[in-house]
Amino acid sequence: MTQHIGRRGLLRGLGVGAALLATGCESAVARQERVVPAGPPKPGGTAELGLLSDLVPKNLFTNTGPAITTLIGLVYDRLVHYGPSGLEPRPALATSWTPAPDGTALTLRLRDDVRFHSGREFTAADVEFSLRTYADPQWNGQLRSTAAAITDVDVIGPHEVVLRFAHPLSNIFDLLDTVPIIDSESIADLRSGARFVGTGPFRFDGWRPNTELRFTRNPDYFVPGRPYLDGVRARIIPEKSSLLSALKSGQVHFADTLGHRDVESAVRLGTARAITLTGAELQAYVGTNVTTPPLDDVRIRRAIAHALDRERIITEVFRGAGYASSLPWPKDSPAYDEARAARYARDLPRARALVAQHGPVPVLPLVYAAKDPSLAAVAQIVQNNLAEIGIEVRLEPLDRAQFTQQLIAGGFRGLWVTTHSWAQMTPSTLTVSAYPFNARKNASHFSSPDYTRAADAAWQLTGDPAEAHAALSDQLLDELFLIEIGVCWQRWAHSPELQGIGYSRRRELDLTEAFLA
Image (cartoon, rainbow, N blue to C red; front, side, top):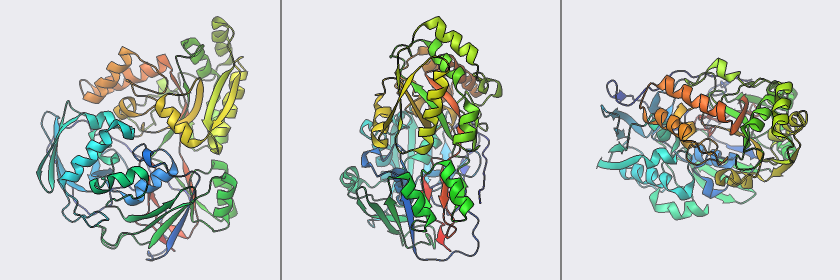
């Protein structure tokens, strides 16, 4: 059973209209999609999860890897969360908010009935600590530039805080939906992975490296009667075939990071159901280090763009769960433009002509995350596509943790293949935040005053948003330091027994409403 949700609209600014007020009692992780329960929720039991890669504590704020996104989704809450469609923020730990007329401040009113798993009360001081910690460069948070643009955090009461900005921030709610509220008293344990203390629906019980993570129900969670599960065990199963077998045999209720073909296989056998993470889109792309010849020549980058068989990749690798595009934005983004998205259609004669203009091209490395079946398949197709135009590449699989480190540090010597996120959020978030796109420091070592100006205009709300988005798209298409393949939806597989699964826009697992039928 696969369900889909969409999103539309954009929060246009912070200085217009009256205060944004909302009420309710919801967890801070946005629930974009859930399997429709077959019956009433049944309390109790432990959900068994299977994850393909292990936890890297220092990557807590990077939203990279299934262990991180599972940990964040279970243990932590946020100030706001986005709903099932659009980018209108909804209450979580913040119950309401009021923007300043000029867009340079935001007042947040907080829940007064929330406690950390240690028993300590959640207050406005924890908001300040969490935002300041996220802005610290050592954590590599992808929205760090937005967090750093918060110049002051005025705590005006235990449950009220004012955030002041260096300039209007079009993506401030993206930040508040992303930053987990962490505990200042256990920060040293967080760095080492010994303890993770949040306010979320599950408490962290322990981590055995390369083996498992354990979580137990938070009996003091602020949503009455939630969660239903007594606990969660996330087993690290680093081999794809073993993870698939564990799902099919019923050893685990849930499997993350399986390839689309494997998910289809499990569904056909009747041993699993699928969740398509629409609204939390990923984009597959080919990255280039523009300081490495011949990738420093935009003609070669354009030749690669015209050589890619995007339709084949979407159809064969992602099993039709997505669509080809030259742009990073999904179709329901305010930055999406159909004509621009079709700019680099497959055109082998044109690609070969561009290579001929340049001259001989040396063998280039093409790096991808090992043990990711989808990325391995994409890399092989890209290798074949480039061979058709006279560019030879050497495939170099790299351990996922090392791949992430290289991406953050800009350590790739030639080409790489992976997926990026953040385009499903406010458009400016992608170009001032995401590692591959950040206008001031990115994995491609690309720098351009025009690109930086376009990114800042969209971020700081200095002009018409539509014009700013068009300028961003044109910069990306003209320079091609990243070559988009297309939008793809990740699919999770789970046993029919585990119901009520949810997820955030960043694909963080939400089991607040989950139960074992």
